[in-house]
Image 1: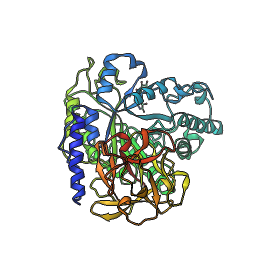
Image 2: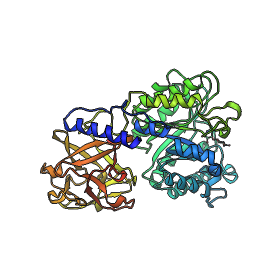
Image 3: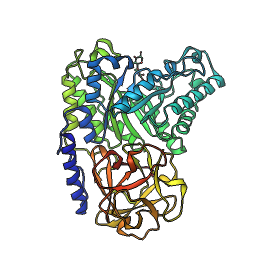
Image 4: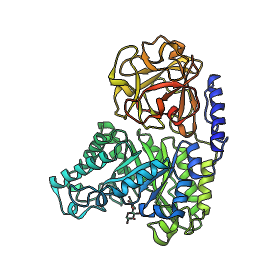
Length: 488
Ligand code: XIL
C-alpha cells in the first residue's frame, strides 16, 4: 500500500517538475498507518530507545519493528557499558542493537559518548589530563567501532547546569577544562566522518537560560569551525509544554545545525496526547528537525516508573497519545527537510548526495580531474570531490558540477543502456549531462538523465567504498535514491 501511494505521489511530483513548476510535496496525498511510515512521508524518522534485553520479548519487538525506523540504545552505548575497565571495550549490547537495526531497515542514534553520569568507576576516579586523555580515547574508540553505522551521535550529553546561570554543569569532565566538549566533537568527527554529531540535553525545551547557554556554545562552535551538526532536545516533559518550544527549535536550526527530539516522554494525564501532538507538529514545522525518538516503547518499558509516559500501554496497546502523534504526522503542511522545501534546488549551494541504500556519498573516484574519470560512492568525508553544485539547464534539468574538478556528471558517450557508466566530463551542457530530480518518499530523490531517462544508481546496490555509479532503468530502488544534504 505504502509503496504504491508513494510511487503515485512521486510520479505526480516528477510530472510537476518536468513541467517546470516550483513544486512542493503534496503532503496530503498519503496518510501512513504507522509512526515510521507517516514520519517518512514527511522526511523524518520516528525512533525508540531500546533495551537490548527486551529484543527477546516478542510483543516488544513486534511493536518496535512495526512502528519505528530508528533506534537508540537506552544504556548499552554509554561509557560504563562500552568501557567497563579502562582500555577494555565491550560492544555486545551495542552491536546487537545495530544488527537488529540493519536487519530491519532502521537507522541508529548513538547515545552517548561522554556524559557526567553512568561513567565506569575507573573514570569517576580520574581527573585532569589522565581523565581528559581517557575521555578522548573513549570517544575515538567507540565512534571508530561503530563507524559508518550511526546516523547521529550524542557526542556530549547534559553538560549544562540547570537554573538561571546558563553555564556549564560542574563535573569531572568539566574540570579538565572548558574545551573538553569541542575536543570530544573533533575526536568524534575524525573517528566517524559520516555520522552527524549532536549535543544533547534536557530542560532545554523552551527558550530559557540553560537552552540559551547551549545556543551560545553552538553559535561559537559554528563560528570557529568546531564540527557540530545537530542538537538533541531530550524533551522529558511534564504536564505542560513551553509555549516557545517550536521557536526554540527554530532558533537552533537557524544557526545551521539540525535539531532532533531525542528522548521524548510525557507525564500521564489530560494533556499527554495534546503535548505529544504539539511536539510532533513543532518538529514538522522546523525544516531542519530530522526526527523524533521516544524514550521507550510501552509504559512498562519507561524509566519514568508510574508516569505512563509513552505511546503504548503496558499491554502493548496504542494509547490516545499514539493516535495524536500519528494524526499530527499525517496532517498537511510541511515537506521534508532534505531536499529543502520547494524544488528546484538552490543553484548557489553545494550538496552531498548520500545514497539511501549504502549511506555513502557520490564521489569523484580517487580525486581525479580528467574527463572520463569514473564516479563512485565513498564514505562521507567532507572532501571537495563529494560536493556538487546544481547548474540550471532550464526545463527542470541541471548539470551536477564537482567542486573538486569543475567537471559535471555525464552518462558516458550518450549511452541509453542499463549499467552504462556515469563519469565526469567537461561541461558541454549535453543532454547526457542534464538530470532532473524525481521525489521518492522520506526526502530522497532519484536523479534522472535527460538523454536516457534512466536513474543514477549505485551498481548492484553495493555498500562498499569505491562501488560504481551507473545509470539504470528508474525503478525506485533504495540504491537509486539520494539524499541532498546542503553543506554550504
Ligand atoms: C536513563 C535510562 O533510561 C535508564 O535505564 C538508566 O538507568 C538511566 O538513564 N537522559 C539521558 C538518558 O540522556 O541516557 C537517560 O536514560 C534518561 C535521561
